[in-house]
Structure formats: C-alpha cells, structure tokens
Amino acid sequence: MAALQPIRAVPGPGFIARVVVSTWIESVRNAEDGAVPWMLIGHPPPRPLVETIESIEDGLLGMADAMQLTLPIALSTGRVPDIGDRLLIDGRITALDYGHPICVLGMPTPSAHWRELVARGGHAGVTICLDPIPPGAGRDAVEALLARSIANGRALMGAASARSSIPV
Image (tube, rainbow, N blue to C red; front, side):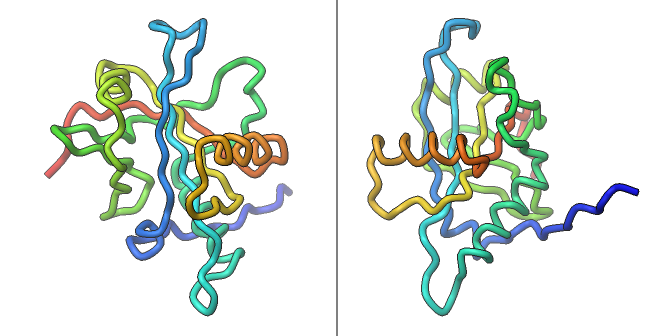
C-alpha cells in the first residue's frame, strides 16, 4: 500500500500578502518566438513570533500542491508539467489562480511583452522557491538562490496558460 501524502491547506490572503513575486522573460532557442515568460513565487524569512520556517514552507507547499507543481526533474527535456489556465490577464490586472477558493495572487505588473506572450496563448513557467528570499535581494542574488534551490530540490515548477476571461 502506497504511503499517503500529507494534505496541506491552500493559504489565504494573510499569507499571500507576504509572498514575493518576480517575473522575467528567458530567451530559449526552441520556443516559438525565442522567449518564455517566467514567474517566481517565494517568501521572505519568517517574522519572529508570527511565522516559522516550517509554517512558511507549509504555506508554499500548499500552493504548490493546489497547482500540482513538481520538482524540475524534467528540465533536461526543457518541459515542465502543464498546470492549466491559471493566469488571469485583463486590462492592467495580472493575477495567478493558485488554488484558493476565493483568492488569487495579484502580481506586480509584468512587462507588456510578458503579458503579451501569455495572452496570445503561450505558457508561463511558474516556480515556487521554498528557500527564503532575503529582503532587497537583487537580480543576481535571486538568480543564484533559484539555481541553488533547483539543484537542492527546493523549487517546484509548472507551466500555466491564461484564461480567456476573468469570471465575475
């Protein structure tokens, strides 16, 4: 009999308010137009007396479970699992349906090119990094952290597409 996986709650707005979201476009030779949009979701280090490393990781894993993100074991093939139509792009709003029944993760406005790549039917890579992202970390520090996290099995990934409309 297979061991049961723990069921983690999908975190609500209190947790989501503290996540760190970053977007970028990666040049890829085999992509249709040579560019793949990505988004990184992480969390700053815990606030004493309010959060623990374990509670933060549990929240991030709850998000990953709800979106069916996986370890990047297939990166050598250049493919991550399709997690469905989870990106909401409407006017100036960009958000991610991360699996909560009434909340979405509002994203800082990605570039127009990022939004265009997704809106016209492409996929965006979604990565959750389980290692804390230090406040004020610049691009180089975040890239190094993400590389370490992927190498250590502390990042989970999937490919999301855009919904055709935002339900009201």
